[in-house]
Amino acid sequence: MWMLIGELMRARTREYLASSSLSPEEMPGLRPPATPAQLEKLEALAGQPLDPDYRKFLSLTDGLDGFQHSMPLLGCRDWEDAERKGLASMFCDIVLETGPLAEAALPEETRVAPVYVNADGTVGVLMLHHGDDALERFWWSGEGDNMFFHTFCDLVTYITDGSYSPRHLAGDA
Image 1 (cartoon, one colour):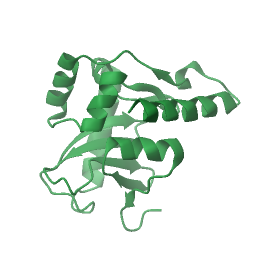
Image 2: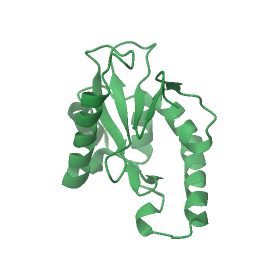
Image 3: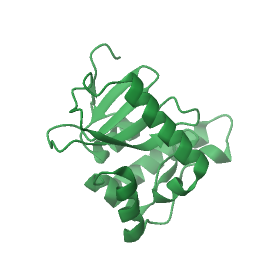
Image 4: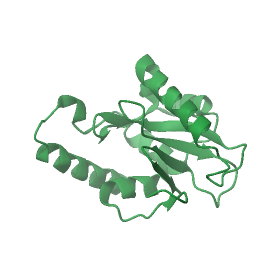
């Protein structure tokens, strides 16, 4: 996991430094690790077991600032921020209203929890739990995209270098 985090930080730092308008809000940054108690609290809040790779990530760095532009990959502490919590909950509600689980070939009893939401609430990633190991655990949705990733590592690999090919819903680019 450390190697994957390192690759992600290198990619985000290069993008940040190449930007014409360097902004502190977009600066990539690691955070102190989440504690076991914080991970248990997040798992209860999410209403599902954390993906093992996501749990390992949070135990190394509790989220990542600058994951995509100005928004972080959410960690345990982000749920204590009322604005981030509200935006993440709103995004989750919108996706569930407009992107039925049946269209995504996911069981109706699938539980969802946001792990990333952009600053205007139009793009995000939801962690999924449906009890079927063959189905994906992460759903990237927004602005016409509906991509599915089996594991958190697959999502980070896609963000870092594009070498993972997610499943797309029919009709999506």
